[in-house]
Image (spheres, rainbow, N blue to C red):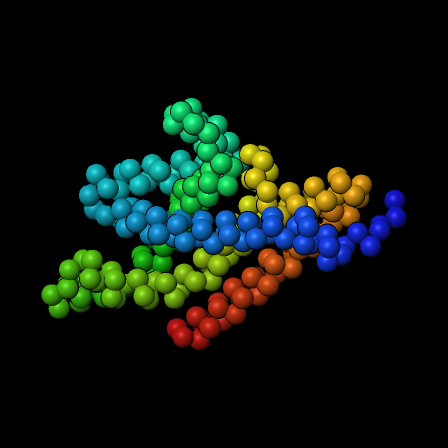
Length: 221
């Protein structure tokens, strides 16, 4: 089968793909911010010496990391309307699911970053009269964040790739846009090829940024 390169046009991107691409990027940003916030809280709970905090956080993280993301998306999308008594949109369902799921992975990244900081710095801060929260906010987390940035960005790349899984609940992401265009215009091969190229370009750009951050962190150390 010959490829029809005329399939790739500005009109195609604007009519079918742009809206889905914007949703994929929006979902990535929302899931990153929400997941990082929730994940940081989980990380602090996991390193706590109080089992009342560490045990639930450990169970949550291990459970989420043991279940495929597409299953979590389907469970939430199908069960929440039953529990709430009303349907919820695919976009909202995807946002909540991705934040909850990615929090487990961001938790482990943040936890590793915090534990990489010498414990003597925490003890020095406490000797100066700072509370545990002040220590984390002013001493530990700023240093940990610098070393975590490359790994966090790598996880964001994986997160962006995973946004294609929202097809399972009918959300209109970038892959869905290419799929719709391919079906309407009768060129499915070109459509999926175009989706692969766009995914590659975005992820490659982010991976180069992650490599640059890695080198800068190495210099700062």
